[in-house]
Length: 565
Image 1: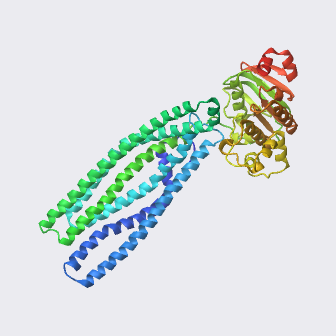
Image 2 (image 1 turned 90 degrees about the vertical axis):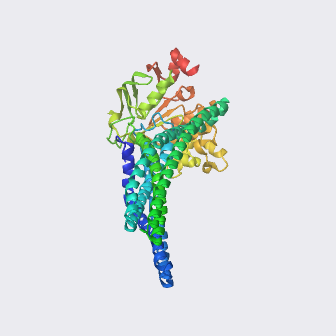
Image 3 (image 1 turned 180 degrees about the vertical axis):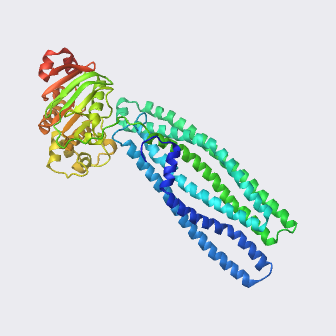
């Protein structure tokens, strides 16, 4: 499933198409089950007429044996059919989850725009589950159609009026059930929107829990979540009311339909048109019809919720990319020369900048928006509104984003640590814990963090690295970036949470570790800027000054204000 223009209908169709074999198998077994279920009241009627009324013990034993065999077939057909349906639903949900995750992780981005991470998680879990359940609902709907068809045929053979009532009345019930499901579909979509919003706020608050505690803003955070949760609760209650009304009305209509069949059957028996056994069969078939008709009510509800969730999934899958184009591979031998010409984006206003290959370049800013825009351009999270960014003379817009990011690694200061050990967060999955890892840890002064943990590098850091302090997290993040060893490394404020002595050690370690490779440090830290080969000051969105840290600190007032104040 790609990221082109998709609708909820496309998502549903793709989900069903991917599981059509399982749905077909489950439907076939279910039809066998429904046939057996419908035969039960028919056989009981035969037993009444041929064995009970005729006082024939031999026939009674024979028909009871037939019923026993029938019930064995019923058990196995239902078990196997339900297993096929449930597996189809779960596998469809799994495929949708993978499709959503692939779209979110697509190198060209865009799916996360205007969506909180918790909202995306809700789409990938709850919405995918609801759409997957449509496969089970379709299979159950086929079962119900088979059950009603068999019942109608059996009733026609027993009594033409009873059979016609079923054949003519069932389509009317289905149409009414479809109409009654429309409000549920609308309210289900609103329910999922509000629930996703609440999940997004919750995830956002949990991620910033340490900051909230530091600011003493727990009460305001709780109040924010309470308001969001109340809106979600109200939407859920509205959806529940719609579902209860839909289910109740459909059951009332179904009950009236069954009562009509029983009443007509009773009248026919009183007139002598039906035998006692046929009346028992007719009433039994009427009661059996309650199951398929209730199934239709459930199917309508599931389809309504599935359509709403499919529309939400389609919005994520068809979200426009943050960057477009670019499919050329990155050359094997990357020198690492970066060049910006007339770049306009966010706080950048026509920036011309050259980053020499193999040098350590510092970039100081007077406006944090400039740093964010610069990092977005270099990491190709966004393309410039005007101008170009080049790597070794090749515009980044021509290069494949995934391969580009292996060559130009932008290590943001707010990057995430993952749940697992410290070592697992530093060492790539396909690499061994070797001397290079030890050097990277030492350069980032993260070896001190390792020594302070109870199990060393094998100690778990918790979700988002919550078991570490802010400074420890920064050092581990820097060690991870250094260990990756890209040809071009761009780091943003890697030492804002460490003390001055540690920062000085990290500055020297960074310079030594990246010797001979292109490195850009976007920061206003004097300790880091002092070890760079050259510093560029971005002032008011443009290059305001260039030189060594010492020269600029001595001669440029704006630089002194930005860096030393």
